[in-house]
Length: 196
Length: 392
Image (tube, rainbow over all chains, first blue to last red; front, side):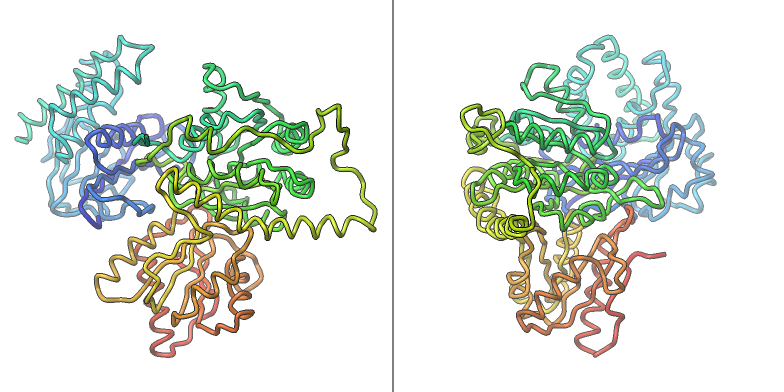
């Protein structure tokens, strides 16, 4: 993007929390003093329809209000989108893509239409089920986006998310620990598996 | 002390409403403005404000109830979008002609069809001749700032007219961005306590609102309404000056961004102005003399001021986010060109239609448009006077 910043594009399906993850990322980056933008693009309003969400994170004021066409990072929350949506469209070769899948990066790369940049995979289902007992991919994918984009340090992210979840889940405190566990497990998996 | 926060445009307007704590809010939900009454009703349910919320069965009713409450002497408002505004059509005229200083939070969305939930300005532009003041925002911050200025403009005895505070649906209403908020007390002091001069629930001074007027009087009422709208220009500027003292953020009828020595100027409204400013910075870095005139106040229309602001450029692009179906461009095209003609300023203009029904508007579009203006002025290349940008 113009200026001193990073542009992220999220691909998910309605109901999976890709929009929420983008808004949470904006939220947590705001707390580090950055200029942030987090917004969804709505298609048909129904569960399961492909949706896109966007983040701009910058040290400079953000004025552009268009969608993102040449992202630095793409996050794919639903693996099945790889065959129906051109997820690497415009993705910078020096950028990266993160896909939620039990497969390895080498297994995913052939589905990415010749993309030669960095490819990371996160098994968000496994992490979420183990940490939360249910499948909510957005916490692991949020952690993955932070780990790969390096928009902030792990410790800072974890401590800001603790505060954020305490606020967000004030009436459901039982889910805070599981979500925090999911964030940490994702960081660990990416650090060990992908050598971040 | 200002507080730094991050909010969507809808959250920002709902927060401004909370800080103002108006008396009555009748509303009916419609995307993408639904969050505003939803959040306000949550503030009410939590006991944070004591606004009377009236759930109604349609937008025809929400504007009727807003006018009724205002006539009774209560500071009133509602929110809507798109077809909701269209359904208010009759009442919009009643609000203005009965000189009701109500405020409407409009989250701009296209009118059907094809049915679509995304942004353009066809809803507000359909209401451009209803006698309302219309103020547009580039960002969540401006939606917040404009909303706080709305009642002091509307309720000024020189004005007494309704105000529509517009922001772009989804583009700013649903985008979370940084924002600087005022303290509650600062907002309350700025907006002040509402003391209507005349109102229905005042047994000492009985009055009628909206009675039949014979032809002997009706035309004078209309003319007075028109004069009040003209007078609101000064009030809008005065209120903006006071708001700058409070917030540090200055506003005018329009903003001139790097236009001082510009050969080419893009005149544009709403969130797309931010995208245009970024493109202008990029082109300036390449030595291009370009600028943006961001129109904030569409009604009253500052025709003369705009014409004078454009007089030294070689060519201007007039950007409409709606279609007038007249073959020559949208409302901005017609009104800006009329103003230029009246001032005898004969610069080249190209009128563009962009961003209909949520079609994205990008910095690349802005580069393309400035390229066409330059080609038109420097090489004498003929362009159609009315063009579409971003059309597949």
